[in-house]
Image (cartoon, rainbow, N blue to C red; front, top):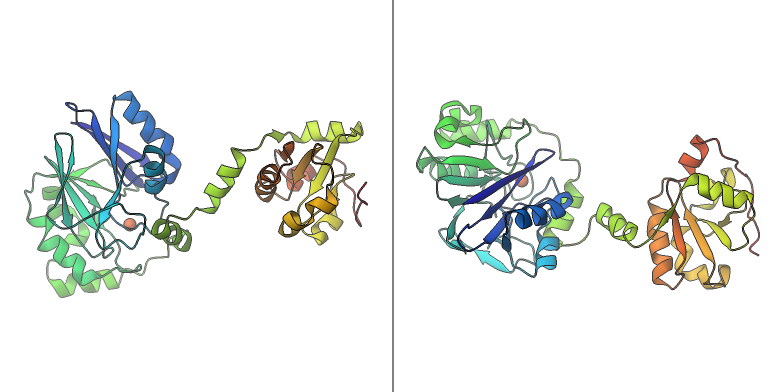
Length: 349
Ligand SMILES: [Fe+2]
């Protein structure tokens, strides 16, 4: 078996492959690591056949849908998953066949209603049901500490204690553990009576994950995160450096239109000399009037360079094929000590 663990800021994901057939699966992929999974598979000569999420993640962005789209392979989750894009829903006890590897789904609700563990030979991918020295929390949507108690004490903790534990999170850089080690020393598992375990989970009082709404919104619907939207836009536009823009503005390059897409008050407080203003929210409706020549080079900027990246991609989509983003934003322009104009609009010309 080929088994690769990929750690990203506390998230653990896995590429597992069959050496005999070169079939592979990715478990709990994280959005920023798409190229890494593909590269790992390529390095081992594997073809990814399934993309599996152990549960609906509330704290990071799943790459399942994106990977499945790129590879034309199914997304696999437990049948209780709310995500409409899941292609293969599995239930407790069922097996996902990856070449000669057999991954057995064990439904372990508690952290979420759709949580499952995956048993593979001598190991158990525990998702967020059992972590090293901890368990998944039960206070997020569909969490249930009673159910988690059953999933642990009447479920996976009754399996062979020698099974290795590979969780979906570890914040201390530990790769894996065993069921025996967790039973012996995991502080959360020392409360073996149901009521004590449940009381312990209720008393945890954890802060909300930073991206809870966005993670649930995108992981449950397959929608895009803000970062993905900006990354997709950035992949479609070239950028110009601050120094290059300054030089071209000062040389009075006739072919260059500098376009500020911030709000009017920000523009009036200070803008790049010669810039025109079309706030991002009005861009599509005003371009024909404000930018009549689609063959001009349009340098788009905003405060920090994100909104302008989206705007430049939109302009390119609309046929302004020379739209360019500023590598930076007005803040970086100011930090560089470059010249600034204040006050009203420069009339379009
Ligand atoms: Fe989770």
